Image 1: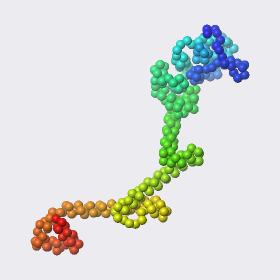
Image 2: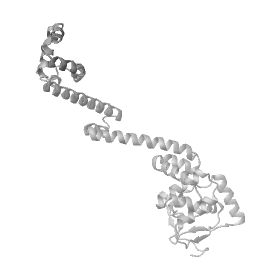
Image 3: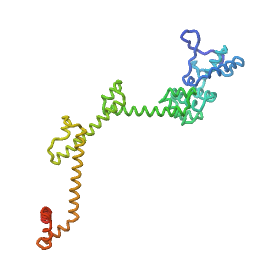
Image 4: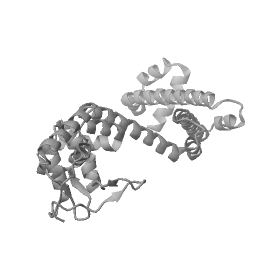
Amino acid sequence: MTATQQPHTTTTADNKEPALKIHPAADIFPMLDQDELLDLAESIKTEGQHEPIVLDPYGVLLDGRNRLAACKIAGVEPRFTTYTGTDPMRLIMSGNLVRRHTSKGQQAMITAMACSVSGRSLRNQAKHHGLSLTRLSNAATILKHAPHLAEQVRVGTLGLDAAYTAAREQRDRTAALKAQYDRLREHASDLAAQVTEGLLTFDDATAALDERLETERLRQHVIDADTLRLADGDTTSPLAELAERGDITWGQAHQRAEEFLAHRQDAIDRAQHALQLIAENWTAVQDLAARPGAQLTRDILGGLAPEVRFLTQRLIALD
């Protein structure tokens, strides 16, 4: 198709006016505002259309949406040309990014949007068009986690940095909710199902799960304490059994288990301390054992309380 030929077109629903298909990447760039479009239309009307509208071989518009709209306003027959290259995306991006009076943030967002359509690498686009890879990455984050803000950045009503901050917060909230839901699914699938069905809020379901897990923690602690009591020879009713019957709460059972463990540890500490003292003074026992009939031995034993004397005699016999 030559520059003077008319492209193949589709038509509007009422078949009154032809309408060109727009390449998705070209459609990302915001149109000129009304005043700028009217200025362009006036220029085309008085000076002619300087640059042709570029179509691909299938009649899809790659570049020149504003020129096409301005020609319509001016009542001028638009002039077209066909792109014969192999990289229409590069044509779209290069021409528009250079030609448009857009901010760096808008350029980054438009490029990120174009990459999402074409599947091209952000790194390669940054290199080809001299854009900041950090800005492009931030734009991609906005596009993924806050697409409504991405559109505002694209048209220039919101800065890239402000949108990125909001998108990160949205991303973090989404991640936290996902982790919360995954935890529910892992530990309480019934609560997760109620959240999915809208019967419970995340907060209520999480509170219920926390209560369940705390009860289970108390229960296991009580069972462990009961196991020790049984091993120590205690024949009283297990605390876990009392709690299961409802005679006491799990909180009360846990408190009694803690008291038992504290008393048990105190007994262990006192016994170990006493044995340590015996060990540290074992030489005195050995001296008495070496001369059991000596007057010194009789005097030492005679000055002891009966229970201490009995213990000492047993230790001497052991030695």
